[in-house]
Image (cartoon, rainbow over all chains, first blue to last red; front, side, top):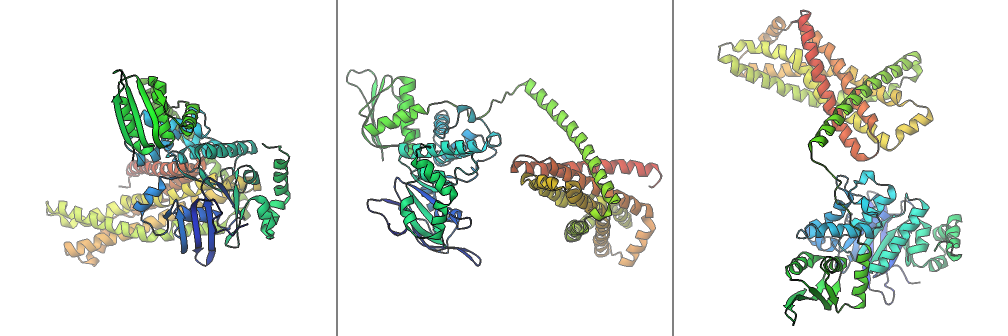
Length: 270
Length: 367
């Protein structure tokens, strides 16, 4: 297995991170962290609570300024950019926040329209509404969800609506922060299928933070493990298991890890 | 950069729309406009296209769907993209139905009245629950939460001294200045002292303090308790066997009831100080004369009136703050709206009660 910072052969890097350091006061979250994400893959990011998965995401998307290090997304350097320079890159990615982060005063359809209106104000209804409609359908929501407000949606529907908004601008890169947390296993499995299907249809690159072992098995091409303030390994599950790190062993070989792995081997879950 | 050309087909009927380069969301509005301008039947030629995204595919698809256009020259990728958007063609509405008619207006009014009634009854019920909680604490004084109460006293009372003092000081100056200007027209500047003394002691001191406490503490009560409702802390308390009324509402209620008179008294003093400084500097009335004159013109009953009103106002503020906080359910948006409600409701009730008090005290002869 190759080291986390190195680009595997045949890979066109979409995100590259070198020597990232993040700290809050005395507490260092990341130190000399390296990671590369390839075009067209679903990279799962796992790690114990407090290992800085969300901080890593926030650094990549520019919500958190790192102390040190280089971050390159879609060929553009992300560190030290002005708000205006970042705008061009922002329309090329979509983000699903952990709790959906839907704008509560807007309906689902209006939420989906927000990024389109912001970047392409010349697109008017009815075309705008039609685009919102098929994005909502792509997110796996029924048509009657369009005119609903976020407070009227269930947890699973909020995530789907958030996904529809993330897809609004036809992004090349999608960030998903714990997409299946808080969903029941059936809804979570359906969401996994949705993500996998979207990736194959639209050729997306997906950066996926998760705790969900089933999601890791079902959708991820490679998995990056965060521990000891850096990415200790990137690869498929068998490759990671070859590393003799206690957290990885505990995570994938613990009772939950084994049962998730078992169900995929036996084909219980398609 | 996409290059778009259109030309009449050889037979002279209809048109061919040839897309070159990229057809994506950035070109969506232009492309749609150009296609709209073409005469039927339209043929869309995708043979020179380099890249198409789902929005581009959607525009092609809707032209096919709505105008029966023909698509030629599409590669495998484009065909699959077109098939995908077709699969997701499930029209949805953007906003809920919103009938703007007379009946809807009447219904809204009815709902509003019903809600106001329910709120009032709820407030009364909450008042009762608070009294029961208070009774329980009196019967079992061990359950009295001294620490919580002292902490609330600090937050509601001591920490408000600065802002209330400053506000009242400025109000004293304003009353003195405006009074002096008007009374000077009759050559009766000296009556400015009567004005300052009576209005600040009897009305403004306590009323402005109540408004400040409602904005500062009433809103905080609603927001704190509302947030605790959302994070299920209140439910957790109940299941452990701690009464939220005793643990959360009573300390806040006591703080507001006991701190309001003290704050109101403090507000009167600073307002009198502000007014005194103004008359000293502007009307050349020395401080000693000012104080003597105040003693002559402000009856003791004015102070009693203020100090009777203050705890009642404090009670109203805490009651509606805690009540609105307890009504929060569902999402964080509601914390904001309930907090607003708490402030509006408490200030409204305070002013209504102030009017009642004014009539009452006048009619018992405390003029």
